[in-house]
Image 1 (cartoon, rainbow, N blue to C red):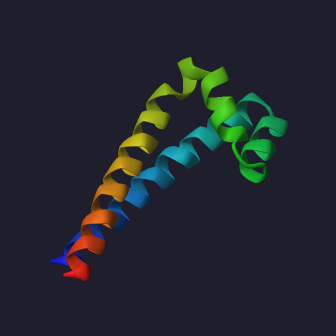
Image 2: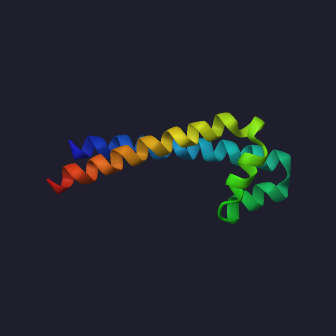
Amino acid sequence: MSALFGILAAIGFIIMFVGAIWILIIAFKKSVLWGLGSLFIPFVIFVFTFMNWKDTKKPFLIWLLGFIVAIIFVVLAAVMGAH
C-alpha cells in the first residue's frame, strides 16, 4: 500500500513540476531577468507569481494542487511504512 502512496506522491511532484515550468515560461516571456531570477534565486518565482497574478493564477493553482497531493501521499506513505 505504501508503494501506491509513493506513486501517487510522485504524480503530485510531476504536477508541481508542470506548474513551475509554466510559471517559468511566463517569467521568461515577461523578461529574461525575471526568468533567470525565478530559475536561480530562491523565492523570486513566488514574488513574480504574486506580482503577475492575472497571468500566473492558473499555473500557480496547478502547482499548489500538486504540492497538496504530494504532501498528503508522502505523509501517508511514511505512516504506512512505519507500521
